[in-house]
Image (cartoon, rainbow, N blue to C red; front, side, top):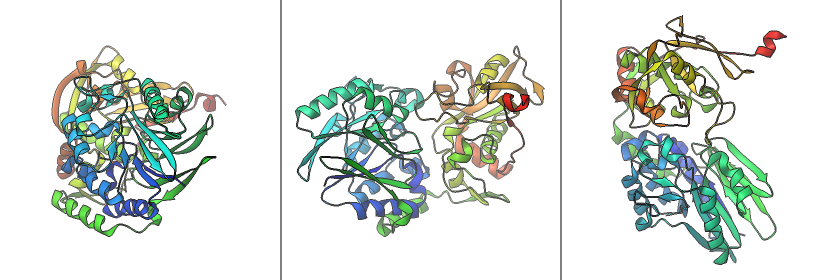
Length: 459
């Protein structure tokens, strides 16, 4: 029986060599001659080791698990298109991409071996694969602005037609569309979707088509069993598998060589940085990052987007430079934007909800410093907002410190644009490290964000 082993969005798993080793061990134990090992993007970046190795740490992983196929996620372009091409050329899996085009409008990385679709003959069955990437990638990753992303559904249908004509018995989408997977099923003649981008696990059937997604950071691998009558999915928790010791040793060597283990400060209680905490509202780690931005720039307000804080084990009680890189592992500068009070309120009103494909409807997106917000869940808007304890004046001008990504992206806080840029400062994690050395790196939950319900108040 043909089988697929599916991982995705493993991102900063490499910063925890033991966990990365268990992921590799899980795949290796389950793999056999009738199995295709596939990834669906964001497996080269971000992370501490990724930043140091510029994605090269993933090459060791691909070799360790005998990876067969991979597609592009938005973070696979974090170090620029040239570096992505180098990784494609050097890595074991075949990269499958139907809708990414290069600076000249040609298929991206074709010269390095990337293909729009491919087939594998497994145990008497021909499996067809194509890859699609979120077309908003150019707006959420500044390093991908020179690339273009075709409509993923049109590209998918073109690939599916070719696969059917070439004898594919089962067509599998390697998707980094996130919430677009449902439309992929409804608009395209696909038999199975292996998804990524959204960091929540999924095991679902839409219009008779299975959709699976393993979540982030290498905690889960999906096994998909395919026969002529049905497709069966089996979830594997990687923590239950023995680590690949040689892979762990290789990663430990890379971690030691990075030289980021200096202790910058100590805190009394570790800070949780799980997605469940960071995307739920005010939290200690979000406050600490926003405080550091405001301190480093002298701005009126500090703003950190929830999606920019990478999940992992709690931070502390010893805070190292590596810890801070792991929180915001991007080569992006802190910038200061000048906004009117009206524009600042528009920024705050984008603090909840998910209009982008990688979010969830109940996500909280904003962590702030120097400001206080009262949010009405029923009205889905800010009903009170202050800066430095004073109500926001719509006509006044305020300075806001945040990451360069936030000005670039049209997905999260669209009221902030490059036109608001008033200054550029150091790289995010460098500012956090300086703040930790000189001030410390801790914060309390102190009511900067208050959530209310109009209906509850009226009752």
